[in-house]
Amino acid sequence: MKLAGGCRCGAVSYRSERDMQVAVYACHCQFCQIWSGSSFALHALLPGDAFVLQGLTVEYAYEDQGQTSRHHLCATCHTRIYNTTTAAPGLWVLRAGTLDERSSLSPMAHIWVKHKQPWLSLPANIATWPESPTPEEFAAVLNAGQS
Ligand SMILES: [Zn+2]
Ligand SMILES: [Zn+2]
Image 1 (cartoon, protein in one colour):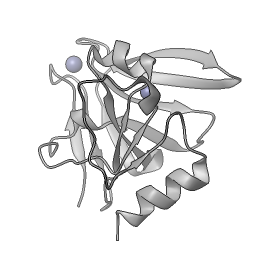
Image 2 (cartoon, protein in one colour):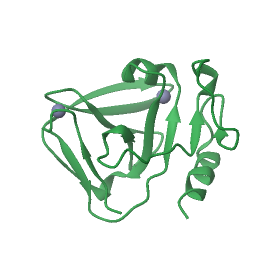
Image 3 (cartoon, protein in one colour):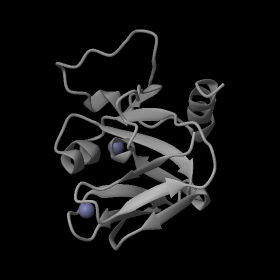
Image 4 (cartoon, helix red, strand yellow):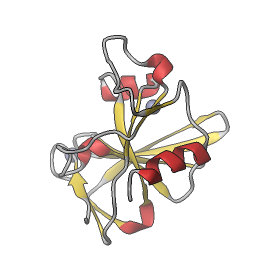
Protein backbone atom coordinates (compact mmCIF):
# COMPACT_ATOMS: atom_id res chain seq x y z
CA MET A 1 0.00 0.00 0.00
CA LYS A 2 1.29 3.45 -0.84
CA LEU A 3 1.13 5.83 2.08
CA ALA A 4 -0.08 9.39 2.09
CA GLY A 5 -0.90 11.99 4.67
CA GLY A 6 -0.45 15.57 5.71
CA CYS A 7 -1.01 18.34 8.19
CA ARG A 8 -4.18 19.83 9.63
CA CYS A 9 -4.34 22.87 7.33
CA GLY A 10 -3.43 21.07 4.11
CA ALA A 11 -0.32 23.12 3.28
CA VAL A 12 2.00 20.12 3.77
CA SER A 13 1.45 16.65 2.37
CA TYR A 14 3.54 13.56 1.79
CA ARG A 15 3.25 10.33 -0.11
CA SER A 16 5.36 7.25 -0.54
CA GLU A 17 6.60 6.28 -3.97
CA ARG A 18 6.47 2.58 -3.24
CA ASP A 19 4.25 0.15 -1.40
CA MET A 20 5.00 -0.42 2.25
CA GLN A 21 3.52 -1.71 5.45
CA VAL A 22 3.05 0.48 8.48
CA ALA A 23 4.02 -0.85 11.89
CA VAL A 24 2.80 1.64 14.44
CA TYR A 25 3.96 1.94 18.02
CA ALA A 26 2.86 4.11 20.90
CA CYS A 27 5.37 6.18 22.83
CA HIS A 28 4.31 7.17 26.33
CA CYS A 29 7.41 9.25 27.11
CA GLN A 30 6.98 12.64 28.68
CA PHE A 31 8.17 14.52 25.59
CA CYS A 32 5.51 12.79 23.48
CA GLN A 33 2.85 13.58 26.05
CA ILE A 34 3.78 17.26 25.99
CA TRP A 35 4.19 17.51 22.21
CA SER A 36 0.95 15.71 21.45
CA GLY A 37 -0.94 17.37 24.29
CA SER A 38 -2.23 13.90 24.98
CA SER A 39 -1.42 10.59 26.69
CA PHE A 40 0.95 9.14 24.11
CA ALA A 41 2.05 9.56 20.51
CA LEU A 42 1.62 7.12 17.62
CA HIS A 43 4.74 6.72 15.51
CA ALA A 44 5.87 4.62 12.55
CA LEU A 45 9.48 4.05 11.49
CA LEU A 46 9.71 4.32 7.71
CA PRO A 47 12.50 4.81 5.15
CA GLY A 48 12.74 8.54 4.51
CA ASP A 49 13.97 8.13 0.94
CA ALA A 50 10.65 6.51 -0.01
CA PHE A 51 8.73 9.72 0.58
CA VAL A 52 8.01 12.89 -1.33
CA LEU A 53 7.12 15.83 0.88
CA GLN A 54 5.31 18.86 -0.51
CA GLY A 55 4.77 22.21 1.15
CA LEU A 56 6.78 24.44 3.42
CA THR A 57 8.01 22.98 6.68
CA VAL A 58 9.94 24.41 9.60
CA GLU A 59 12.46 22.44 11.62
CA TYR A 60 12.97 22.12 15.33
CA ALA A 61 16.19 20.33 16.31
CA TYR A 62 17.45 19.36 19.71
CA GLU A 63 20.08 17.14 21.28
CA ASP A 64 19.41 14.50 23.88
CA GLN A 65 21.85 11.93 25.24
CA GLY A 66 24.30 12.56 22.44
CA GLN A 67 21.73 12.13 19.64
CA THR A 68 20.23 14.87 17.48
CA SER A 69 16.54 14.86 16.58
CA ARG A 70 15.19 17.06 13.82
CA HIS A 71 11.44 17.60 13.85
CA HIS A 72 9.64 18.77 10.74
CA LEU A 73 6.43 20.75 11.16
CA CYS A 74 4.03 22.43 8.79
CA ALA A 75 5.20 26.05 8.58
CA THR A 76 1.59 27.25 8.67
CA CYS A 77 -0.33 25.16 11.21
CA HIS A 78 2.70 23.60 12.98
CA THR A 79 1.44 20.05 12.78
CA ARG A 80 4.44 17.83 13.55
CA ILE A 81 4.83 15.52 10.55
CA TYR A 82 7.95 13.49 11.29
CA ASN A 83 11.37 13.62 12.86
CA THR A 84 14.71 12.12 12.05
CA THR A 85 17.25 11.07 14.65
CA THR A 86 20.94 10.31 14.45
CA ALA A 87 20.09 7.18 16.48
CA ALA A 88 18.31 5.72 13.42
CA PRO A 89 19.86 7.22 10.28
CA GLY A 90 17.69 7.27 7.15
CA LEU A 91 14.42 6.67 8.94
CA TRP A 92 11.45 8.92 9.32
CA VAL A 93 9.75 8.72 12.69
CA LEU A 94 6.38 9.54 11.22
CA ARG A 95 3.55 10.91 13.36
CA ALA A 96 1.15 8.15 12.40
CA GLY A 97 -1.92 10.26 13.13
CA THR A 98 -1.06 12.37 10.06
CA LEU A 99 -1.68 9.40 7.73
CA ASP A 100 -4.83 9.60 5.62
CA GLU A 101 -5.53 5.94 6.47
CA ARG A 102 -5.22 6.23 10.23
CA SER A 103 -8.54 4.79 11.30
CA SER A 104 -7.33 1.18 11.29
CA LEU A 105 -3.91 1.72 12.86
CA SER A 106 -3.26 -0.46 15.88
CA PRO A 107 -0.01 -0.28 17.85
CA MET A 108 2.34 -3.27 17.67
CA ALA A 109 4.24 -2.12 20.74
CA HIS A 110 4.17 0.39 23.56
CA ILE A 111 7.37 2.04 24.77
CA TRP A 112 8.19 4.19 27.78
CA VAL A 113 5.26 2.63 29.61
CA LYS A 114 6.78 3.64 32.93
CA HIS A 115 5.25 7.03 32.13
CA LYS A 116 1.96 5.58 30.84
CA GLN A 117 -1.03 7.38 32.29
CA PRO A 118 -2.67 5.12 34.88
CA TRP A 119 -6.18 5.16 33.39
CA LEU A 120 -4.92 3.47 30.24
CA SER A 121 -5.03 -0.35 30.15
CA LEU A 122 -2.91 -2.02 27.47
CA PRO A 123 -3.80 -5.37 25.83
CA ALA A 124 -2.02 -8.28 27.54
CA ASN A 125 -0.62 -9.76 24.32
CA ILE A 126 1.27 -6.71 23.13
CA ALA A 127 4.97 -5.90 23.52
CA THR A 128 5.80 -3.23 26.08
CA TRP A 129 9.01 -1.73 27.41
CA PRO A 130 9.38 0.47 30.49
CA GLU A 131 11.74 2.72 28.50
CA SER A 132 13.19 2.42 25.00
CA PRO A 133 13.89 -1.08 23.65
CA THR A 134 17.18 -1.84 21.93
CA PRO A 135 16.99 -1.37 18.16
CA GLU A 136 17.28 -5.15 17.73
CA GLU A 137 14.42 -5.95 20.12
CA PHE A 138 12.28 -3.27 18.56
CA ALA A 139 12.91 -4.38 14.98
CA ALA A 140 12.01 -7.98 15.86
CA VAL A 141 8.59 -6.94 17.17
CA LEU A 142 7.77 -4.41 14.46
CA ASN A 143 8.91 -6.65 11.60
CA ALA A 144 6.95 -9.62 12.97
CA GLY A 145 3.77 -7.64 12.49
CA GLN A 146 4.43 -6.95 8.82
CA SER A 147 4.33 -10.47 7.42
ZN1 LIG B 1 -0.50 22.78 7.98
ZN1 LIG C 1 8.19 9.59 23.06
